[in-house]
Amino acid sequence: MPAAPEKLRVAFVCLGNICRSPLAAGLFRHHLAARGLADRVEVRSFGTADYHVGDPADRRTLAEAARRGLDLADHRGAQFTAADLAAFDHVFVMDKGNLHDVLALDADDAHGHKVRLVREFDPEPDDYAVPDPYYGGPDGFARVHDVLDRTTARLAGEVARQYGWVEAGADGVSPGGGRG
Ligand code: 4NP
Image (cartoon, rainbow, N blue to C red; front, top):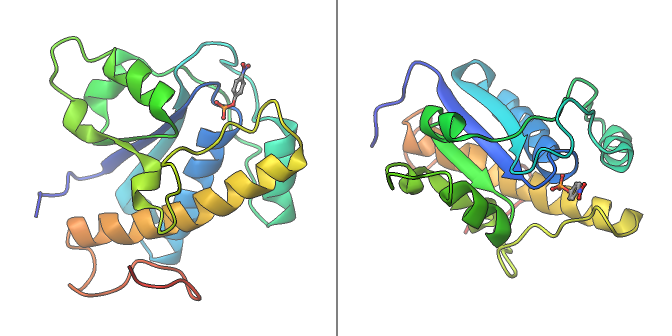
């Protein structure tokens, strides 16, 4: 098992940093807090593009999150850089485009092992991409919320297990979820 740094640094990355990754970060924080692990992990989100640097999350993301009791009002957009790639312990991307763009920052091929498609942790991974809801209707935002809620719940359990923060064999799934 890898030694846990004093504070584990986890980044979620999408394209614009206003729809998917702010939600992933908020939900992951929620699932860590439910396990009493909030203080052990710094959770941030970024976009590969600079379109929305300094902007709040998309109002449709904010509305769907608020409807389910999650407050993302503090979010402000930030662009992911090579320095971030070096600094974070784990980088979870939403789709293959993000994966390509993040790995393109890794000039020395030193950090690729830290970068994963987040839906590798989804019990129902479909095509392993979190679909970009930006150009679609409200259904897309509800679906992305469902996907990221169950995926980050599983991820919180996986991180806890990987760093020895839970008993071996303890489950990483929220009530009602299955093991897998
Ligand atoms: P996100 O969605 O990558 O999930 O934040 C998008 C947000 C904005 C744009 C594209 C995707 N945009 O082109 O501005």
